[in-house]
Structures are given as structure tokens and as C-alpha cells.
Picture (tube, helix red, strand yellow):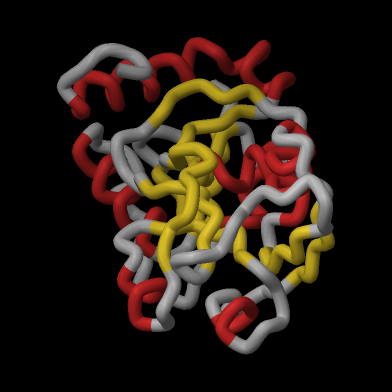
Length: 213
């Protein structure tokens, strides 16, 4: 039987993923506290690989991993060519436009300055709204950009809004909801669909609902 390789993101999504996999009795060999990055589940003939969240989709698209768990934000931002098989019940948050309370998001007569690491997502969203923007890419502490006058607003993932509030900012508009997604390499799905679908069905049962409820 062909071995299946699953890419798991590090961090909290990875922890939630391993917890879910343990419920369906796979991946018990995965130790998130270990320095190892590759773990083998001999009983189920599955190899698990720990990766940075942003790298999971690249490994899956290129067929190095058959399936993977990744945030919806990474799928939208990267525009990678993969199958989105199942919405998972964790990793929920929102992609948002945030700034100072009185800041106008849309002004057809001027260019809005936007700080974000999600450059493709920001470009596509504002383009659909007919708003011209200038993007400054930042990889961390984007909240500082409008506070210090570098940009008008930011585009970022918001879960609780605590960091925004602490820096005098607020959500001005929710762009779209985000959750964790099980993705699959297109060729892998063709040749390993039975094994992949068995895992999905077990996940659905563990979640207590129907597919993509």
C-alpha cells in the first residue's frame, strides 16, 4: 500500500491538528516537543512532516506532501494550485482592514497606503472595491504602521482584536473569514483518493458533523 505523507504546520494549528489526528487514531508518533521534523506512523503507513505554515501549501502543490493542513489565508495569498478538501473546525479568525477609529478606508480621489504581509490578498480586495492602494510589505508588528504614520491602514489576521486595541486601532472592515483547511495535491488525490477520503470521513465523524458544515 502506498505511503501517505501529510504536512503539518508548526504552532497552534499544528497542535490542534495533532489533537484531531489522535482522535482518529493516526499520527500518534508525532511529538511536537521534539526537534525532529519527520515522524512515521507505521501502523497506518503515514509519514508526517512538520513545516512552517507558509511552506505547507508549497510542499503539497509540488507533490512532496500528499495532503496538508493550512490556514485559508495562505491559500488565498499564495494562489497555489491545490484541492481544498475540507474546512476544519479550528484556526478560525478573520482577515481584516484595521486602522485608527476615524480613518476612512475608501477615497476614490487618493491612494490609500496599506501595510501588510498579505500583499496579494490586499491588492485583490481593494481592486474589487475600486480603491487604488500603495502597499508597504511588513512581516511583523504591522500595527505600528498606522500608529507611526507609515500607512493609513493595515491588512492582517485578527482573532481577538486585543493587540489592535492596545495600539489604539480597531477593525474597520472584515474582509473574509479564515479557518484551517485540509488541502491535497491534485495528482495525489487521483491515485490515493481512497486513503485520503477515509481520513476525511474519520475527521468528519470526529467533528460530529457533515462535510464542510
